[in-house]
Amino acid sequence: MSNITYHSLSDYVGGKCISKTFELDHVTFEVHQEEISEWLTSITKERKDGEIREEWIVCDYEDIPHEYVGEYHIDESFFHLMSAIDNSHYDAEVFHAGVSLGLSIENIEDNYFGYFSDETELGEMCADGLEIPDNIQPYFDYEAYGRACSYDFMESDGHYFFNH
Image (tube, rainbow, N blue to C red):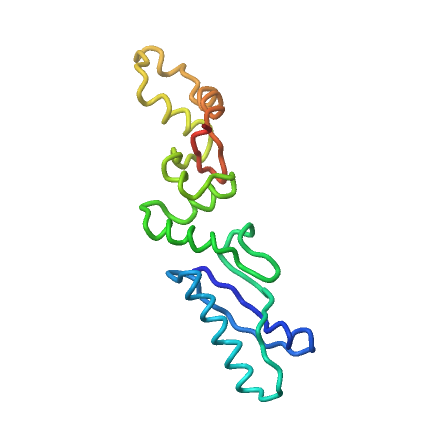
């Protein structure tokens, strides 16, 4: 569950901690901006101190790649990422790994090869289509083969993506 917590900036600067946490799963950027606006407006109405709250500062966030969060904002492309995850058969971990490697959200599914715990497991998968004679199979070094195959991939947290 992705969420982000904001402080009302003017209150924060004035020494008051007024914060709110927003859940971001299944929310669009526009809806999130509206939620923030409604929250700040409600603070202004409640406090009745003549100060208009219009700005916020990020206090904390969870399950959001750090590339998408700044001190005063969450990047709109995070919501595109969440939409891609919602519409994919891959889980969020795959998308977070792809993003950390610099892949565009649109290319993650096409470039994904799979999850492998080590180079031996990668080698076994890559060798799956090879016709290795039965008498040679016990001597085949899957770890070395996986290491050689890994040059064709980018890897993050065990998730392998084609490197092209």
